[in-house]
Length: 309
Image (cartoon, rainbow, N blue to C red; front, side, top):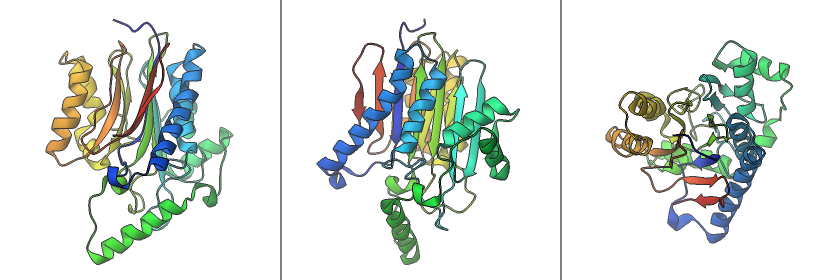
């Protein structure tokens, strides 16, 4: 059964600050940022726009918010550089585009969409991807635009802890990603994901976000998924595709499939994180197996909601 109206869900990553470290002012800032992002995507859907355009608008807004690990505010590699990944997928026919390890493009999600719409490829990296960005007229920024003092300080702390042998598994350092899923009034699904990766990651490391079927997936007959967490674990499990397969081949309800993959399968291999998953009938779940996940949603005619823990 198809939904009668639109649905939009977003996430700003499962790498949230622990409750004890979250000040009321910072928590309010996160809720306000999530609200702005929801408004960007909702404005597309309210005007009868496509789910693909809505997730593009929402993820662009997330990339522009320095609080989140994507675009402006992306984390640094151990070499002190930015290497960003992004993907987008249209549930209408499984068209997809993705980019990996890029720097300089203001909104990586727009480059992922350009790969989908301007080339015969799905995943691109390096100079070839940047050539597509220039041909598409996308905005570039210098390193200073993407820099935030908090991310730089986090890198220095991570490197110090590594040297001291005291590095812990704090999720706020290990994973942070942004994403959106949408169902439009025509019944079409779409998903998009963008990330700066892991703080202190090795140069050239690619996570699950640009891997179609791992961190990003959409098919009008089943679901749309955008994930955040330990990228290596999400790749090993092909988390997004696993949810689709359980629905498509096993006739499992989407909500059950998504929760089982995150709570049971991901936890079983020591992976942490979460995801947002939206079904063709409008059912929505946002499970996570860590302390929290920046997230929000809005339904046609309803009020927006934002949550952290």
